[in-house]
Image (tube, rainbow, N blue to C red):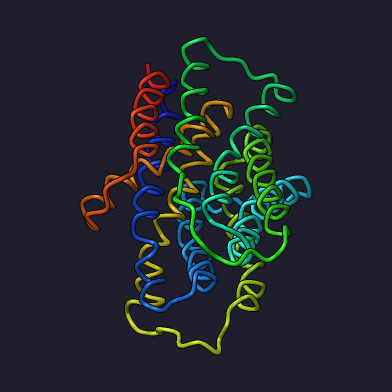
Amino acid sequence: MKKKLWLIYAIVTTITWGIWGALIELPEKAGFPATLGYSMWALTMLPCALVALKLINFKLEYNLSSILYGLLIGLTGAGGQLILFEALRQGPAYIIFPIVSLYPVVTIALSVMILKERTNKRSWVGIVLALIAIFLLSYMKPENLEVKGYLWLGLSVLVFIMWGVQGVFMKVANNKMSAESIFTYMAISGILLVPFALMMTDFSQDINWGFKGPYLAAMIQVLNAIGALTLVYAMRYGKAIVVSPMTSLSPMITIVLSLVIYSVFPNTPMIIGFVLALIAIYLFST
């Protein structure tokens, strides 16, 4: 059972992030900007961190190494999210999302080269299928919009690298400190970047401060926070080369829920990606 703990946590992350992906547009469509949604996410990380600390009797590790690793993991994750917002303001989402979604490639490459992680042939097949599925699941139809230079491309690649590196840092840190301490510093990092999210927000526009604004955003963002916590646990018990691509398959859950909730039927690439994702998960779990 202990050998499968990584799989259980990875599945929880995949499901919670998948549900979050299907619902996150609700407050945005209701007039609550994504940057403020980030702020709500950072706040929802705090109660999850308290729950995690309770599990270790609030014995937070505060030596220099733990603080640096925790903040590095948190800032590469949360910082990447803010940079992604800026990239989407300037460039086409149908190109940006496929680039960013393939960040597990960085995690896998660094895990093999630096951490010397290895796995069996079945899992390697699953990894390859998962990477193909991730790309297809993030496919979006081209849209006509005004592209502002090429800075968005550089920002997209930066997010791709930051999120990929985060997975390796998370795995290394799990061998040096508790998962609960890692997540707590991730929560602190998210809060530290809230002022930047506020500066990126256009407060001149009409913002929905009612239930469908910050309150609904908080209820949805807590799913993101829970997924981040279980991701840390998945990295503790599993290999980064497998955990990273598997948890990145959350869009398959999003597709199913979007079909049920919004009656949005996925395009052909997404359907193929969905099938490949199911096969990959099966290979990882057997």
